[in-house]
Length: 190
Image (cartoon, rainbow, N blue to C red; front, top):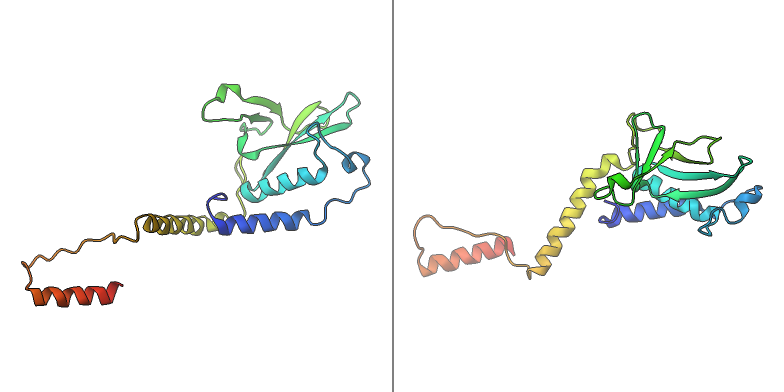
């Protein structure tokens, strides 16, 4: 829905900009610099988290610790590629769930003692395993807007050709009757 509805895209993108504001102010030396091996700063991570939270209602972060149990990396994981088990103590990650279910990586749920674990946030609007996005109540309106866009594009591609056929079941009208009918139809529908 996010990728196909310009209104939803604008709302989410604007909200993400608002959430990120002027960046992050922190006293933490770790958070002031590069926070992962991808060269990202905390602002980069927060932008990705905010996008996932707005689209899906949740987000995931891989937390990597060193031997002293200090956090050494925070890595964003694409929420659309995440699955959880019923107990929510295992997080499954796959780049392509449709084809490679057997190749899913399994991570423990967030644990302050584990060298690598996943912080899985699903918000408080759900009682199930997966979050509910904030725009849930507008999904039908969003889908309607997408279908209207498709309808207009189809009309444009078909040179605005009419999609209806009129049948007269009372025989063939005379030439004068045809002209009157054509004028009335033209006045009503054009």
